[in-house]
Image 1 (cartoon, rainbow, N blue to C red):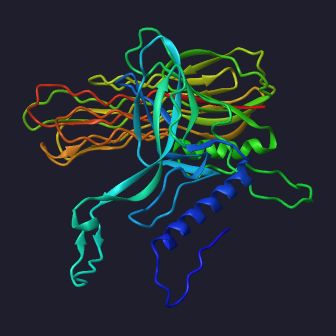
Image 2: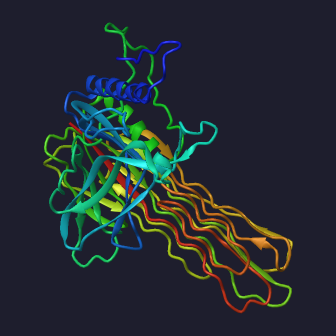
Image 3: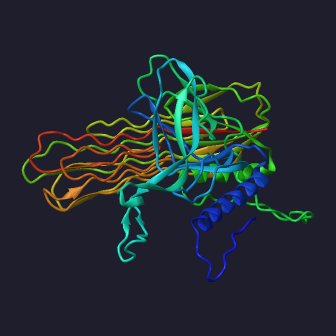
Length: 460
């Protein structure tokens, strides 16, 4: 890896810093080539979540490594700087915030592309040395007050289209997901999102000695550290090292029934199943000195399992459980999610309702959502649904509904103040309960539970 050399007493130049940045980029690019192979293009993060409110998806934060050049345009300037250098090198591009991407129309199959390019950003009016009056700086070059970019950034934007967009100068286009949109869809809840083969490589394993001793005893499976989707996928990817190469990921994020056929070459699958969340309990209308309480809805059961022998000739039924509906009074149970006859995860269980009571009062919750892994499937992790939160009344105007239980894929509905309906839960999570203040003639509905999830990791 090249490094800049400077000397004590020499006049520092702008190119000293610019060369250090270029050398670092070249060194990291060479390391990326060693890791992933020359001319590889891979992504990390960038999770695609369909919208329940519009015909769009949201792409989470992440990065792309892709072929590029050291500097497609000169960097710096004003009598100094470095000229362009089109030496080929692996480049890193990042997206630091969630980005919403519109789906053009319904009734077609599209591809979601990552558009990678370098841009000069972060413009600032810089102070410049004033040779005529060294005690006073110039505002911008020649004291003109103009701003200059201070950062060359590798950035990612996204587009959903039927054909690949034009490649930007010295940039790269990487297909990330296949987006299948049913005819007549007005939101993305029924959209099928499938990761493109090879776009998301499996995290690298720890290096092992060339000669390893034989395993003894009964090996155990670790429990995933945390509950977000990326951690679950990373955990499942670790499990796959003993069983095959991750070839494709299929995700089913909307409630409904599906017939799933594995891709050609699939030898086994890891399935991640989340039951639907229950809605929170509503609360009745109240009179003078009375309040109503409803506790939060429970999350659905969760399981991940490895199923050997699943091949491309099979058609496997998949059910994604519905979230419990937001209704006044009794909460609604979440729907069961399942993968064939191997994995079944029960939907979350509603909390409880107090009826009309007099403060001080608390109302508890319950859960009996259980996962079942059977028929030759090998469990990786199995977890019952969680109970929703307790609702509390401290006075006729002071209290809160119970929070919905969180799931492996989403947060539970937030606690809401008195006189307000419950909040909806995320995927597989419970909706929040309610607290109805005195003299409110309107019954309140608990928050809706979130639909379940089924994710399939195909191993070849």
